[in-house]
Length: 439
Image 1 (tube, one colour):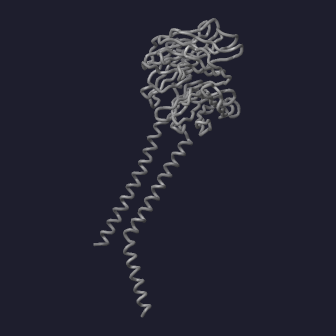
Image 2 (spheres, helix red, strand yellow; image 1 turned 45 degrees about the horizontal axis):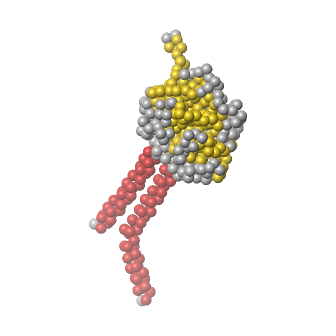
């Protein structure tokens, strides 16, 4: 009876250990599967008859994403050729599923370069409109992408726009380049409008060289910081406070009141300044590349996207680089195929991962297509082979750990069941042996 009870207890114990082990492995696999859902890659449209560019991405209040760039499609139907082209606004769900697209008809050289969601849930887009000359283009839409108004700014020569932000008073600030105003050549152009797109003031910065503006942000003191061929700080009316000859495609104010600049010029450069524009440090993160977009991350570090090549410029790949708060590289990721792939915009997402967009010649239907990539916090996307191997090793590691745990627990359980009888028997044998020795 005792043997039967002992055997039954041991069997129950082993069964329980096995069930715990099995559910643990399932939990690990399930957690990995859940993490996979946060990583994906989408080619927007990718048909042979269209050409799509993506230059800016923002996460929207519903958790999805909005992208601006350009769209060009030509096709034949009923013996006639049809054409749609112009700046575009594309909306996706949180998992990258396409929801809608709006094309603001113009020419195929007209583009949206920057988009922000506005306080009313709509969107503000800036880019370039081509008429007799190229002009700064500002477009306001509702939350479904329907145009509410649009306006242009420009003179007798070419003028371009690259960045827009909604300001604290509900208006908009736009940064770009002008050949129509200021000194000869290219100059930085800063335009402030009211909430209806009516110009309130504009400022030009530059000399007779080439000083274009690429990005703008309203600063904590109500003024503006402009990035481009120069770093320019203004007050709330656009009056110059200081200018530094620091080149950068994108500039953002940091948590300490200073500025972070992602630079280009045959390498990817990251520069940090104090609130007066004095350089605190500068890091070369990659050679043979361009840094187009930077944001400070929730841990105080920085995330940068752009593109770079190995042997020559083509093919080149989209790059994603993460640094610590001092600009020291923590990791970098490469995305792309056998063609030319370029990253233009990156943002940290609500879940701690990253969304980046750009253009690809490696995927889609041929030609140029928009590429939208969602990564986890380590910069891995869904089909990344390196991440897949890491994930599998993680699963194996956890499975082996649980296996060793189960074996150890089983051994300890068996010792608990049989150790006391074994010790008693051994004690009796020792006592018998000693008694015989005495005799």
